[in-house]
Image 1 (cartoon, rainbow, N blue to C red):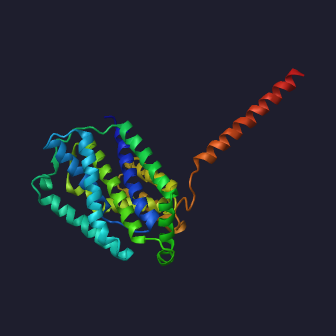
Image 2: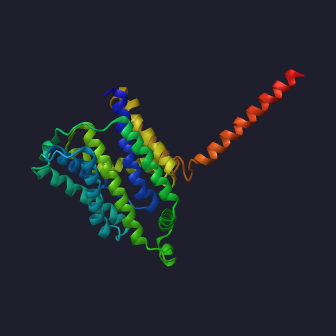
Image 3: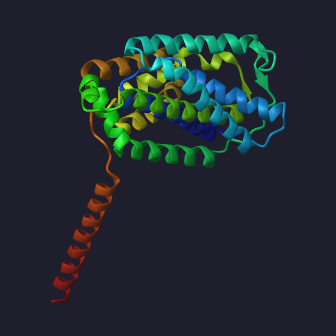
Length: 298
């Protein structure tokens, strides 16, 4: 695997994690500091099934996604009924508990990690995955469910008064995000062929949240842009050695302080509008060309 390919795959997997955080944070206003633990669930479940039980990649991935969704429901059902600040604390504790379990289980390889996972993640697979998941999240945001989530995010009491079942919205968003994050874990495990508990600590979840806040909690376009931009930035600054962390932090803090709503605010890229504008531009240019040809003919 070439250097460029490995970078693109890594950024794409990160972007899937960012999209899962957007469902929770961007659409419901909740903060999950244990989201990376669902990535661990997906990575370890699929890895164990492939290495120890010789299951094919598609089946192992499907089972891992289902397990991730089930775990997400078990964690999210009681957690999402709490206040927002408590949700962050409980998910953080859950993430640390998962790390402790992985460090002490024989089946997972303990602190040494799980190795021997076959390399099945390819560049086309991750790119298609990102496009499909982004499309699904975009449609989810535009749906009735998404509009209710945004109403709840703005004012939960008002949403309850309107008859919106906010608990159902929260748990549904949490389960969907958990399943997507588990899939990111599958792609990660079958790309690196090795996983260990240190990869899935809470700081990974925090980085994803920063990316969503950086791009704009109200903008899916912004979250996607920031996921790509902040994913590439450390590689661009690699030659700066110790300075890259400082530069990275300064850029993030600058945007958060001087653009509280994020880089994109409420802006969403509208592909239909873009296509219409391109058609108009093409017609104008074509018309100008015909006029010039007519003038030359005279």
